[in-house]
Image (cartoon, rainbow, N blue to C red):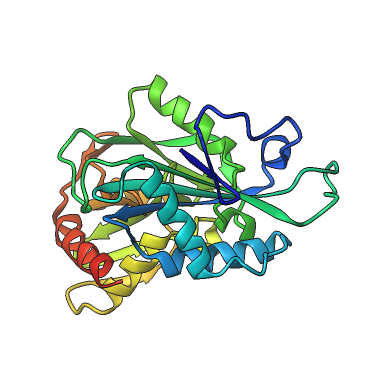
Length: 281
């Protein structure tokens, strides 16, 4: 079942048409969330990011778009798909209503909530082959729009096809200043000794929820020296460890980049702390 503007409809229903602005112009935002036994991981952070993003894109925020209202719509969707007693992956999409060309006729919005089952209720590290490569066909622009979770993901789509065609599990993207920005599906962290860093938002990376949570965790620990700093491609092969973060997987260790193989010591240490933060949230 799909939740379309508060109405639960079958997944095969024709509830959108060719005038949808998300389809025509990518005029849409989305949040991907993990929901376990009806609890939305880091819901306040997801909600605040969505509201801030809607303001930046000049979407009109409905009066009933409160945290409580949208939380209720998400839980209704999870329940309609019989997922209240297990782990679910939820996508909340908000798009500007039909009308206009580049210039919209209205800034009013609609929303869709989708829910699908997930295997594990916790963030776990998967011990599997995970090789990455740089994606250099196209570059990320280092501006505020790049930090938003919009439907404009064509670079990620083409990069994912490139990765699949060449036997990689993921790719790392560069901005137009040739700095490593993020992975195709999440933020990137680099470990060298006790030092950990991730690119700053001004480099063009997504303002990720788990990125934010891990930064808070790292800044509270005396074990590591953390900084938000540029990452050059030359640093990748000198690192001890690389890992990717997003709200669904949590932490994904990178096993190999070119001839360099990595450990997952820090990722193993942090995943338990991330699960603890999710339970307390």
